Length: 177
Length: 186
Image (cartoon, rainbow over all chains, first blue to last red):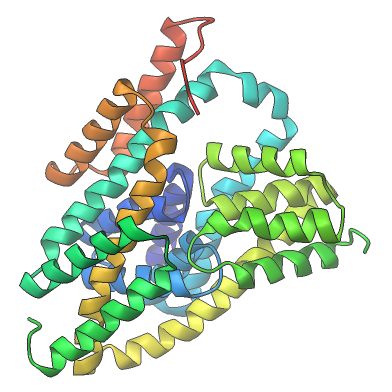
């Protein structure tokens, strides 16, 4: 029971403080790895991959998956409801006070500040994951992907498929771990 | 088509199924479904909701669903819309999660997911790159980015703490500088 309450509170907080799209939930989920030990860094990475290729908003996917790995279907339900509940409450209020919200200097300044901060938080996760699990082969592959991103816009599935294939081949030749 | 709760739910369920790989595709999807096909709302309203969805906490596409649902049928419309957009995500993840717990112990799956980790790094890089031009617009916002980045990456500060401090800072700045626009946003 206590676990369910904790799950609800954690994901409610994530819904309340994540700002700027589904990937904005990642820094909070990453922080949970060290504080709650509900899942590992590798599992979070699996989650992000899975969420990117399944239907639905990525942030919701992540909550469902994290809740499920923590405590099954009930956990999934609790985490999913908890992450959208703050949105639901806030959006209803904003919809009612539309004009006041748009022109209010406080809300405008908060948005102005939160945008770069959220972006910085996500970049920090990128660096931490980079340090977490990278070897020479990974470095080469990542470098290649970075090169590709400068060329043209591709579907997330493209990068995930190629990296999965490389992982499979590397595993076959015992190049991983 | 009438704006019944069931129809609102059905529409957002359909959108939820088509939402693959990030909420940014929701705008073109809703443009077709809401404006071209059903004429439930107009283009200006939709763009307004899109901007608002990015300015409130939470997941952008979920916020969009709530705003549009509220516009169509107030509270219950918002509930029907959010329920519709979440259900496909929920079902697909629960099914896949079960599968995952079974297969991740296999050796070849482990190495495959090691590889996928590199793909995920790339996706995070792309997300940052996408957020960058909308958020880091001048030197001041550049420092904010750097501050959040360094604190989070190297000092193990909780992201919630950083966000709360940023919100408090913004309130102070807004309080100190009355009647002045924040400069060239957007």
